[in-house]
Image (cartoon, rainbow, N blue to C red):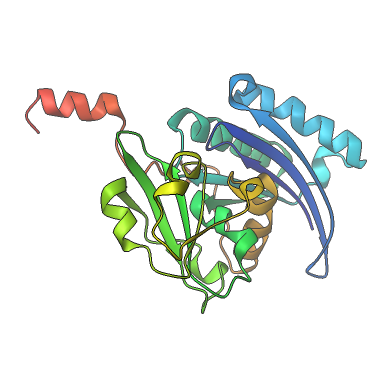
Length: 232
C-alpha cells in the first residue's frame, strides 16, 4: 500500500510517503515543512516533489493520513484541507490520526507509561497518557485533557516518560524518576501519522472527506472572548 501523510499541528510539520507490502514497511520518504512556509496550497507542491523523488504518480496513492489534533488551529486546518483535497482528487482512502497518539507511536515498545504533551497556551497543556500494556493502535483515540501545567505535573509517576515540544521549558520541572524522550522525537512526524493511519485503516477507520474535520479540543481565544462578552 502506498500512503501519503501530512502532519501540520505545530511549528515543525512534515509530509511523508510510505510503502508497505503485505503489512511490512519497505520505504519511507519524509520532508519537513516549517510553519512560516506552510499553506494548504504549498503542501501540494511538496507532495508532488516527494512523488517525483519516489517515482510514484498521484494516482498511485491508495491512502491519505493526516493529524487532526490537538495542535495549532491554523496548522490543523491546513493539513486537513490538503489531505481532503488530495484524497478526493485521486480517489484515495482517507484517515484522521490523533496528534498525541502519533507522537507516542515511536515509543510504542517502551515498557512504561508514556505521556504526549503539546502547548495549549495560557500555561496549559494538551496531554494524553498511553498504557504500555496496550498497543498504541488500541489507544488511537486517547482521553485528551486540557490541563494547567501545575495540575498535570503531580499526575506523573516514577517510570513515566514524557514526549513533546513543551519539554524545552518543562524538562527541569518533572518529578524525580520521570524521564524525557529523545529530543529528536519531540515533534510529531508525518511518518508516524502514516504508520498509525495504516493501522487504523486496516481496522476500518476510513472516513469520508466530507466528514473529516480538525479536532481542536478547545475553543479558540476569539470564541472564548466572545462568549465571555455575552456572559455565556
